[in-house]
Figure 1: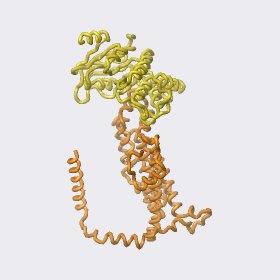
Figure 2: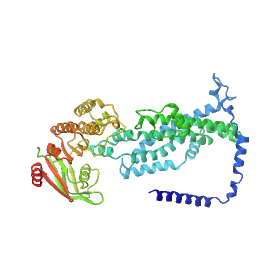
Figure 3: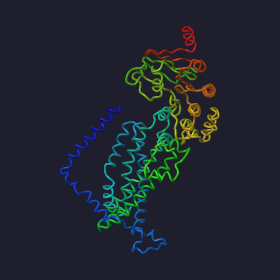
Figure 4: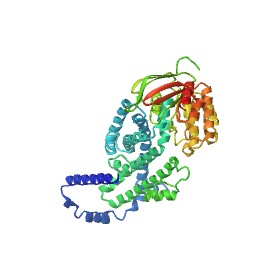
Length: 293
Length: 227
């Protein structure tokens, strides 16, 4: 078993290398790349400019703590709000569609149109959705929310119906034999059985939407991306770095929350939950032991 | 034993997945009958049960099932079909919800059925426990309690007494007898002769791709002759 596996991996690597070689016309471009990067980081980006956590000069800050009027805080909070709303709306929308797209829950003639609908929603990246909604309803967070909701539906929908299709069939067989309705089967069997995966996907999507909030902000759909775009235009890369570090910290916190949340629906989780310290360590450095004991 | 309209008629059935496992299966089940499906491993006993349940299409022939499609047919599969991440109550309640749907059924009646099923199977103290924490024997009790709460007209039970200790077998059989007394018919895939003798009124035997239908007396005679 091992030899064919190694052979397949090696063949894929060689194929990837040949393809890359075909794509790159001039390998000489790599020369001096590292030097350019270190110069750019040391001269333009480092150290991060933490003035992004101080109050903006306009509008005048009326809060006692200046931090709450800062670009870093306001941008991040708006991004989190956009990501939160669009993840929740997208998750609910995706659940409705994916329950009809799973082949083990629905006959093919129903599943296929729903799959096509999800594929169509997913085929447009969130950036394109953002541009469309900025054109339709103008700049601002609502365009961001709509863009990310649509993308979330397409993306999560696919992950969800694949998860449903991978669940053990015996409980579904019982449900079908007993004549339980589609709604009861879905809410009382499918969701509890796949809750761990659904929560993991939900948290991943939230994290993804927080990270992507930076991109859609660039086209005017609100959030921290708006400020990143402004600083990029004015070549203030040290401030950009500070905002990227803030995004990184938020992503780590979300990952930590995901670990805690999912522990409620894992086999061992209801016996012993991971400590906060362990959650921070695993979110930052990765898990050493997958069994979570 | 009622001789009215049969609950199930198998009409010249051929079963299997890609290849035919057994053919020329013609039989009927009347109200109150308990059928034991016997035969060596791999002859198609489970396939026959799954075909009757409508989970797979027969290769040939027809299955006429005259029970209410909403809750009239119960099933205890080999792997029991529990919802691992839900509580014992949730799992048993699924049975009650099949015959008394939430939007139509009486919620008090549903609750009553679930509680009496849990008591009958001796798992009332495990009500809130997630089923994944239960032992094998307790899980079989949960699957039986689910069927008990459903009160189907026809129950399909696939090796539901296997891997059980004697005490648990007694508890499960007592609960099933209660269900049978209330008018449920049953098709059970079984390996143990003593369980067949306790419950069955007829025996279906699948052997060498052929199907045989015996009354329990005919079966006892056959077993006696073989011994």
